[in-house]
Length: 393
Ligand code: ATP
Ligand code: MG
Image 1 (spheres, rainbow, N blue to C red):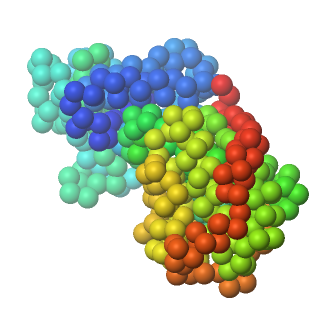
Image 2: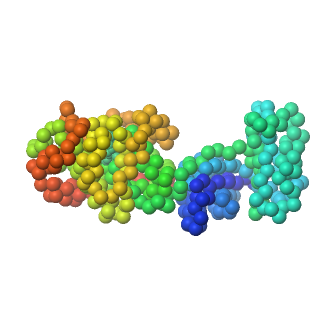
Image 3: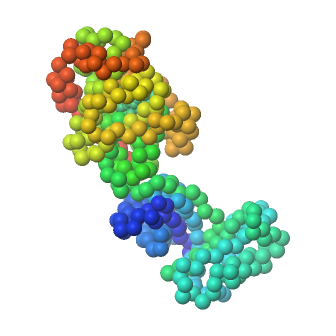
């Protein structure tokens, strides 16, 4: 029997005039993700995107998995395509649906008639499908309140579809619908999660990583590239910039008070990120900061580090506990890489007693001991880009 995948829109259903643009983005994103899964036709109709295999080699299981990573869909279902007449629907219900009902004790049939020209109304369709299933599986019980499995028939423009059970989609809104943002990506647990969360809200995410070679290693950089690659399962391919902070860190150690090292370094990171973002057309910065998690993430510290940028700073984790962040990190598959033990530039020259309630004036006084502009320019000149992608392009 011919099967297809139905992907149902989430919030974009509400988007009125822009809807056409969003739909086109979803179809394009699906087409990209399905590369390597075989030949498919992808199109949209009535708040649903359709993934239709064009030959027997098309891998529908893999396509289902990939479609589950595309932001903008609330649910996915694998369905069989049936001719729009009652005999064909009843016959297909008997042949296709039992595989989903093995082991179940109860079920319920639902019908949705989007094509109002179809002469049979939803209640009769439900009976038709429910009755057909009971004919081949007579021990099943119908339970309309608490069924173990829900089977559905949908009558749409191009055909009728039978399926049993929906799986959750990736949620969110289509990648690209919000514009581009630059993620400050470290090798930790938080920043990959922050990138994922903003991609889910429609951002095209590019990343910027700061290293401090030889204080940080080649492996530490590769770990960050691996994390970026893992995030691209959801975001699509990603540009990752790398900037060296070695000189800045050495100057900080030479000229400034130890308790301010981290804050001063973070101000350089923010300045450089703001500059890279503007050059590359990103409209906001993203960090993995969470209020109170470490000394540099108190409100006073955030004020000190944010005051050197003029772009908005998105901190999707700001109100989350570490446990919550870890559970997302596990879900998206970055956790195991994040916990590999490599040093980060923030962990070299870490002050023993960092300022937790810094005063902006005092931080600026410390900065006067440095040639901030020259150091920033020198670091900016070390910017190097790589492209990473989990999927084949
Ligand atoms: P993470 O898991 O993101 O490393 P963390 O608790 O270690 O979290 P910090 O080291 O204080 O956090 O950094 C806060 C945020 O600053 C990070 O989430 C990230 O956005 C950014 N950041 C820190 N170090 C780097 C780095 N080496 N390169 C790029 N961004 C960084
Ligand atoms: Mg970190």
